[in-house]
Length: 333
Image (cartoon, rainbow, N blue to C red; front, side):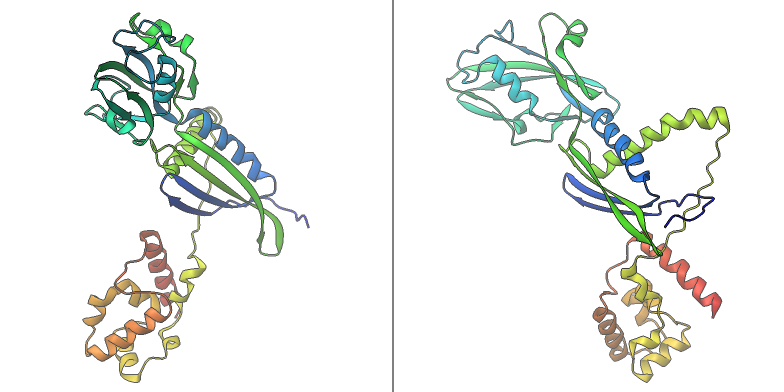
């Protein structure tokens, strides 16, 4: 059912799950139609404008063009180049946009990405296969590695390199996959609100959640001109709430069903809510006046039974929200 509105609902939930080079990020709730409105341009920026590193040119001793062969190497030059393009690099010095690296290998040997690590660059795909040296030969080659975005064909690079180098098609994007789904979710009694779920995978040059953050920043920068020319004012205020998993921490210590001695010690110390105990940790709880070891063990066991170990600190954002919520509840008492 459509209702009369004067303001758009502002999404205030963002859940992030990172597993290595993969991440799943959910943002919600959005008004109907706003999911695709935001998700599609973010995906485009991720794929086309995320900065990465790639070899843009190669020089191989004794080789004059990309259709040549290399004596003593199983792969011809074309295959060798294709294999190199599958190796993903990262320039170690963040102030540099370009480096030239030189390599020499003596056969017999199989060359993998990890063999290209040096003081200038890091290979984030160490197991990528490059070539096999079949004979007792020496293979020497140099690479020019640059920072860039998207895809740049070799013909657009050729004029920028010296004649002894072979220009390469440059695949800069570190994003291997970026997809999104739009799900309908319930907000109060309405079911037509939306949740965006991004699934992002990178090649290791950048963390997937950092890639999403970078894409959003790039989109924001594109809107900056409107702020300057039209006095656009950002009036959004986010009100974060505790996740349901932590709501139990805002309940009274009465619900713990403690022995009278334990309960009285906590009450005299001014502790009214379960979350206060979790925030304190076992060392601080043990310092409560007249609280003996038996009472400490009882409190610890009770907290464990509801899923909270007093020796494991809460995430910083949860800790801050819980502290604010408890202060608010104490003011209301």
